Image 1 (cartoon, helix red, strand yellow):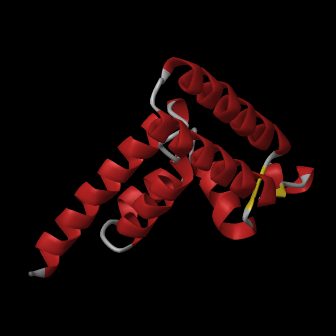
Image 2: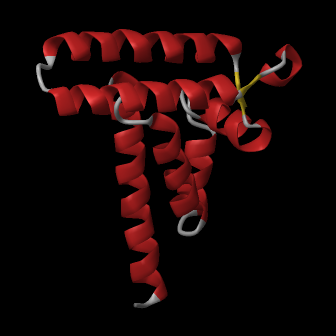
Amino acid sequence: MNIETRKLLLIIAGLLAVTLGTIGVFIPLLPTTPFLLIASYCFVRSSKKMHNWLMNHRLFGKYLQHYIKYRAVTKLTKIISILVLWITIIISFIIIDNIYARIVLVIVLIGVTTHLGMLKIMEKERCT
């Protein structure tokens, strides 16, 4: 595979990851952070312009920078993420009447809550 084809495939994969990450903001079963990290990985290897766009994005830029550099999020981000996760999972648990789906929901709930809980809280000075 030539370099140009590889770069094009990485850009497409990065855009797909950004799309899935964006959807993940609204659907807790689809994690946002891993997809944004995948997008960053793809863009850094394919397009400086796309990587700069992602890292300076109005919604995702600071979040990604803080996550990559400090492995931390703001206290508000952590609280909102956990709250939205729990509300959505509880609603899904009530609506879904399949024991296997409910087990998956509980596993996701425990895993994501644990991950979010382990993230450091961003200090005020770093948030600017």
